[in-house]
Image 1: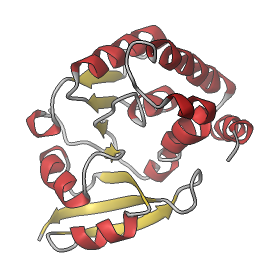
Image 2: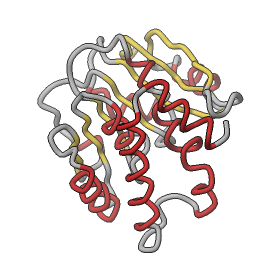
Image 3: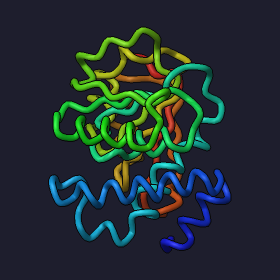
Length: 207
């Protein structure tokens, strides 16, 4: 997917005002890159495809989710959590243990004017105590599925939809997870990288 194709995908699935917000976020990312290494310098050349659409493609997979927050684990530079918060009318809670990333995310949220729905928790997910179970849980390159389910289970219930980009290891990680976890698992191909997969899980519970 080229950068022009990525921008067109965003316009087709959302609207021009959302595209403008993503453009602003890209500028914020570039400005911060001189202070901390949020994403690799080379990936700015493919920012829309590699990071923005790669994050945004999770949103259609969450269409059947009920009411409640979208919980993003280990948001880091803002993908997918902050991108989702820009594109979706739903509360988004981002979990990030690194203080400099937390400060960056909070400053970006303020500058983008989405503080009414987007929040950042400075902690590891094991220490997070949600008031309500998450409708959706996402995590991009955070931990192997069995470990992620174990650390995050207290934030989810049987109705939670898990959206977990896993690259080429998606199918093998699902098989590993089945040893200790049961549920409905499906691997959706990534539109930005056909060899990569997104694990979509429902009704996840320990065996």
